[in-house]
Image: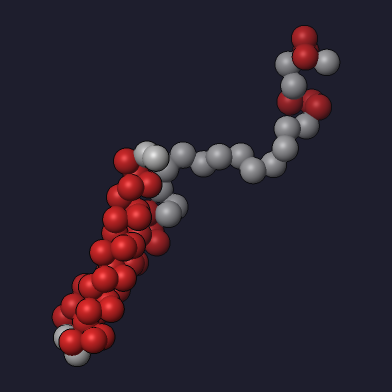
Length: 66
């Protein structure tokens, strides 16, 4: 698991814990902090290397692989 993935998961888990505790304790500052952490984790979803999800076409294969 990459460091970026660990950061995303950590922010999401911390955000859920803070938000949940803020709701239970009726503490608006904790609720908003949890929401900010969750938003940061969601934004980080778009950071990092993009992997191709489409299968390779025959044209993309090297000439010796045909």
